[in-house]
Image (cartoon, rainbow, N blue to C red; front, side, top):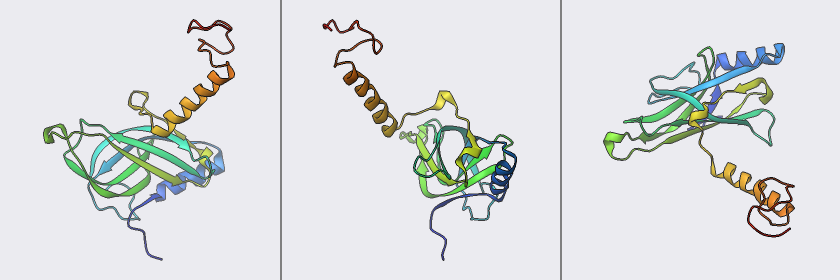
Length: 181
């Protein structure tokens, strides 16, 4: 079987950390990610040519698969002027846990007059998602469209439970929109 053109996989160190976490019950702390413009190979232990390192933006276990974890890192608009062709996610001891071969994407910078943020999303099979702790930077959290939709659905459901009156807390009996009960 041939290697796919783009992929995400655990490094040898990442696989060892997962085996250790399953055996000992100690969780793996993933805290940062990096992108680079090198030509990464499947047996790599780290990025070939790192260009930006930052903290993870968001993370979660994949709901329909208990062995997978989704991680997202954002390269901010203030960084750029290079192509992104590789990415990696790192543990708290600065070990590359997982690597990503990414489609070559130009990341502009402010001097290009086309500054933009670039999100890197990786879904990583870790055998047991509950062995991984993902620590995010709360100052760099971006809401995805899916997250906003889910939160709005929850709020709409609460309003429906309250009979459509806008109250400051359910089941508060005093509507804040001036309407009657």
